[in-house]
Image (cartoon, rainbow, N blue to C red):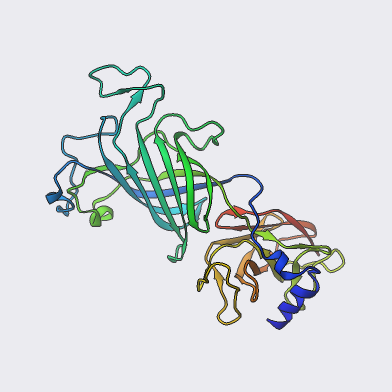
Length: 342
């Protein structure tokens, strides 16, 4: 650790505190495609004495649906992947009374008159975890469901008009817009008399994809010094340069900011310690020359509040020449830097 500290103070060439402060996010919107399974929509259709009283799969009383005005419901489903990478967690959607708004609403068709085509107002909560159960963060969104997506939404977002109102953990302070990627619900409808503890056993719907267009408050960034990116040979801590290139298969040390929460957790603004080390809780990904690198360690740099050390191995197929190095944390990408590969 002493050599690492000397390296940070010496070859970076700037006061270390000045590169350890979070900065406002800049760059493109981050698209999160969150896949879920076993979705069940529970309809409020019985009196409170019967709530969660039946262990079997129970159909809603009177077969209510989302197109019937003044219906209350909520959804529960399991998060299984984010951007194609395995994940865990829970997606909950609390549906306010449906209104089934239509510009051409007519009496007797269970519709409400309005200038927009929407079914109801909803509140979404997506708490995302690593596959081993390590918490990453929560995204919260609210707005209208069904109907066209908002203007400017990516083509993968096919319906709903939701505003990302914030987040926790790796998504603290995030904003943006969101919605479903499918026009047809892929869930099972149930009565609230059904015991939700048996949701998986009783069976839910197939895969449903929720799309979040995220504007994060901060982004992970490789520190850049007057001599170039703060990427060093792990063997001797010397900076990677055109005359001192990295080699395929070599272990490198990266210095970065903005990797988000750590474990053990610290009070906001507290400095990272050397014992114990604080490890990033977000999934950290590094690519070199377009190839995924093995991330062996990503944790807080002792004595800083937002400085991180990342140990990665150069892919065996990398090089030769100048290669793009890209860093992401919780699927949020930072700026690209370039390093020399032998």
